[in-house]
Image (cartoon, rainbow, N blue to C red; front, side, top):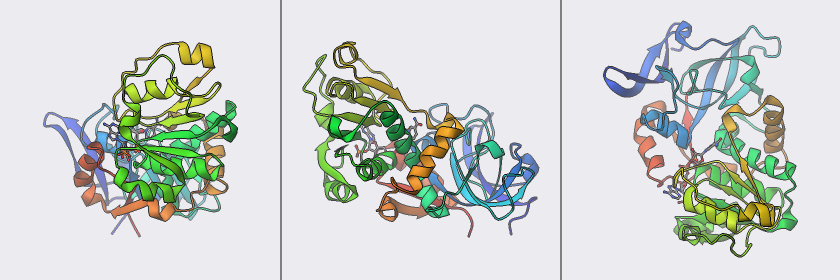
Length: 333
Ligand SMILES: NC(=O)c1ccc[n+]([C@@H]2O[C@H](COP(=O)([O-])OP(=O)(O)OC[C@H]3O[C@@H](n4cnc5c(N)ncnc54)[C@H](OP(=O)(O)O)[C@@H]3O)[C@@H](O)[C@H]2O)c1
């Protein structure tokens, strides 16, 4: 039974035994401080969770911490006036599983400033199908549009298209009226990506040849999950005054490019850092995700539900690039 003195959490350590992680019994006072205690119902598995869970990529800034960068659940207790017991809430990023205990836990304790009331139009499970992945895709669209992107610029390339961010981006951008060109290593899944809203599905190697300083401007803009040569090629292939939003690095962290896309075509490179997004922008994104940008095929994008005990086996699948869609973590009923 879950009590404040006795609940289960997936905790990550780095100590004299090296990296190790697993399910432990915890008490509330061991969790990072915060005004709101939440009974967590759902979380999700993101690439960053896999890095953290496997002890790769220097994600955690202190140890030990509960893993999980996303959570959705109901408020149990709150010393902040904005939240009352029973309120459904969500939290993505905001230091979860980075500087403070995260969402892979039957109970979580979070500062009120980091919590978003569950928007009307989403249930708790849907909020976690979106999670950091959907929030990141939505934030990219918001920032691109704030910087002048419109469907008239031309098609939007989405790389890493069969991953969590990629699938949700296909759906969100197409809901918002853009023609989406999905770039994927899994062309056998092209039909599914088209069902999500992709107009065209192109193989991953379309964008990995060494780019010229400027190529034919085939895209109006892009959301890039990959980095490296893919990002350089996207920059060289974007229409005048289009935006390339970069959020990921599954293909590498180095980028070799020239100034030409920027000074000849006025292309903008927008950095997407979802974890530290200011609250006003966070609320704008979630309002859209619950209404006009809400993916119509949300339940199809959740390809797997697991329990906390399956996390360890799930992480290597994400890091190998073999994952497909979103994996949800069912924490409590
Ligand atoms: N900046 C932020 O705030 C933020 C937020 C969320 C995620 N991210 C980053 O965004 C990226 C995607 O995250 P995710 O959670 O969607 O991960 P994911 O579900 O594991 O998806 C990653 C996808 O990238 C593609 N891929 C994998 N390895 C690749 C490689 N070596 N070269 C090219 N493509 C490869 C695969 O898609 P295909 O087979 O279809 O090509 C894979 O499904 C990660 O780098 C993650 O850290 C950043």
